[in-house]
Amino acid sequence: MPGLEGSPVTDYDYIVIGGGSAGCVLAARLSEDPGTRVLLLEAGRAEPLPAMAVPAAWPGLAGSAANWGDVTTAQAGAGPLPYPRGRGLGGGGAVNAMAHIRGHRAVYDAWEAGGADGWGYDSLLPYFKRSEHAPGRDPALRGTSGPIRVAPVPETSRHPAARALAEALCALGIPVSSDLSGKHQEGVAWPDLAIDEGRRVSPDRAYLRPALGRANLTLLDECLVTRLLIDRGRCAGAAYLRDDGAEQQARAVAEVIVCAGAIGTPQLLMLSGIGPADHLRQLGVDPVADLPGVGEHLADHPAVMACFASAVPLPASRYNHGEVYASLPSPLAGPSWPDVQLFPVLLPVAPPGYPAPAGGFAVMASVTAPDSRGSVRLASASPADPPLIDPGFLREQADLDRLAVGLNLIRTAAASSAFTRLGVTEAWPGAGARDSDALRNWIRRTAGSYYHPAGTCAIGPSPDDGAVVDPELRVHGVTGLRVADASVMPLIVNAPLHATVLAVAERAASLITGRQPGRAQTPAASRGRQ
Image (cartoon, rainbow, N blue to C red; front, side, top):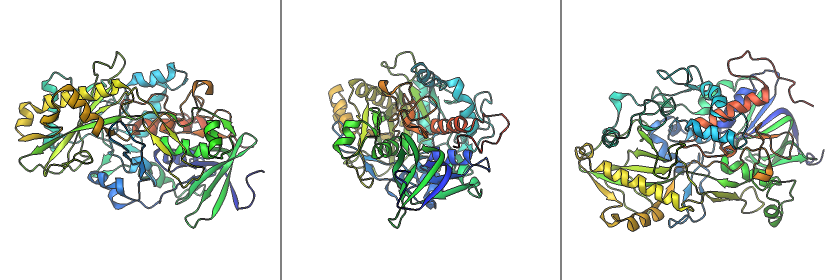
């Protein structure tokens, strides 16, 4: 078979590429059938860093070995920006801020209306429920026995700055939601966090590690997948580099499932000849499937902060430095779903290049339904070179206007008695950014990312419309190959992505095995074999 000579080859039924959030779900679910051989390939280390288990330690993980260390192209007036993404088992779910919030149900219905058949809210709901255990929430909408145990910060443990923000926003007439992932998906809420008994509930801890004792599941860490092996239009396996630099190959008898995320997945597809043919030829990569949508339509949530200095010491957060969230419609939102999110960062921080206050916190405004889009492109044909990441922040004027709405709302809230009792003053943007032009200039200079990339291998019926995978998550034009991660989202959800990624992966496992949530688990050992 072409592409499979010259190095040792091992056969599996399924190869899962990427041990991040989606990969942990897929490897665990596919290996539930003892007759199915599953290989999970992960570029990072299997052994977690101690800080990964500590909820409040997540900010320090951005500069650790658990991060790919990416940087964007120049954005708006801010220049290149750091763009951390998880590397290691659990991926983003092992290094993120642990917010477990679904997007508005109308977002998923828009996926389906746009051609992603079977991906509407009602179709996804069983998979959301299957992934989570949310005690005390509405069992008609929330999971009661899933692997990811979630809960809000207990009322007696809430940070005073988070309390002040919630009180101030409610005083402005913003409604209260008892559950942003439940019936009322707009307003101020104490949302679920993936924290249980003081520890992060990461996807590797919840899904993968309980499955690693299975004889039919093989994990290879510190293995960088360099290309997919394509034989006459079929994905036959993957080539990868071990940490000693030796190349090895593995063959998939049934399918390869790429779960490398919205940055890593399009990079790997393009390195393998799957993507925009002209771009690939320019870099010396022979196209095997001309899919112009690979790497296009990168969406992310741009964010900007207002920083506050505190005259009195504030306690340290024991949770995720966020705790409370507000999902709100700006005047540009339209009738469908909220497009702005506000939340605190309970640390004394400031944008790059600006001094942080000695004590205090920040309040972030993020556009969660952005109009701007960017791209992921190869910098070279070498897998060792990071890709060119352009989130396209503030490319559309409406996103700048939305951030201005959010910052003005934060400032209005900060003038309330709830903030006054904390003894805080605004450090940034400060008095120099009071008029509209000055405020927008601040936003252009300091806007960053909420670190929620999505959409670079979108679901859709036809590649002519920019789709990369069909509604079964099969890559157009290549058999034996699926994608299951944030890259398949046709529209970015208006919330942190992790809860949705888990549901996407759960549904992907169901599509592959034929096993449905809540039904008897029938063996699928021979499914897809040739």
